[in-house]
Structures are given as C-alpha cells and as structure tokens.
Length: 148
Image (cartoon, rainbow, N blue to C red; front, side, top):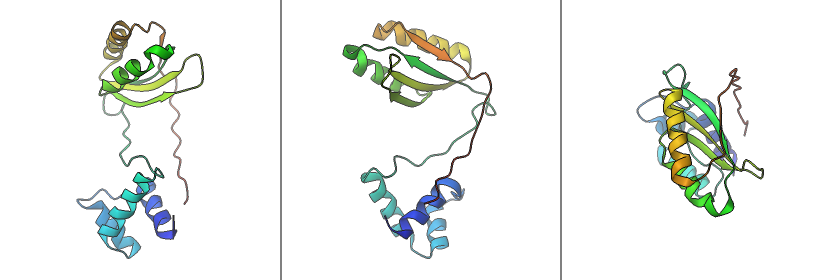
C-alpha cells in the first residue's frame, strides 16, 4: 500500500461522501481520477486488505431489534449451520470462534419475536439445540477509525 491507498482508506472509513458518485468525490479530494480510486479499491479487496465497503445503520432508530447469538455446533454440522445462518437476511456478521460456543453471529429483525422464531427454525432445520440469544442490556457504540 502506498500513501494514496492509505488516504483512500481514511476517506471510505470515516468521511465517505453521501453523493451520487462518491468515488468521484473522493478522487477529486485526493487530486486523482475516479477510475484510479475504483481500481485501487478493487485491488485492495482482491488482496484481502479490505473486505467490504458498506454503511452502518442504527437499527434501533430504524425500528429494528438486534441481538448477538452464539451456538455450540458440532464439527459435522458446521457447514450446514453456517450456510443456514447466512441465509437469513437479518444476519450481519457470522464468525467461527475457538470456543465451546463456536459460531457467533448478529441478527437484526423487525422484532425479537421474529428473531426467536428464526432461531427456533434454525435449530429445527440443523439439529443444533444449543443456540444462545444474547440481546444487549445496554448499548455502547464506539467509533473506531484506523488512521492509515
């Protein structure tokens, strides 16, 4: 990565312009052209330096409920369980951890009842019975910026 890559990363993580052509706006700020910004982002995605670019929304202010879930998934059911979790459109993160509760994911839905029904369906279709629903008692949001 060079200085231009670092400047692009700083812009997309903290100052992403909400305009019709955000990458053109970023290019103008950095005195390069839009295609260079897009090519550099593609290269960083391909190389694994960045995973995705997307918005973060305050789900509760939009009328949604969110929760953290954890499951004890036997090795022989891991693939099917992860695939099923990922099929729910309200799942925003899904990670395998080195722990007894080895699959952790966040779930956002219109209400806790919808999340609970989805978790019940997940359990029934995969045979995984030990799934925890861990809604936050108090929300702490910390803005994390990595100065490149």
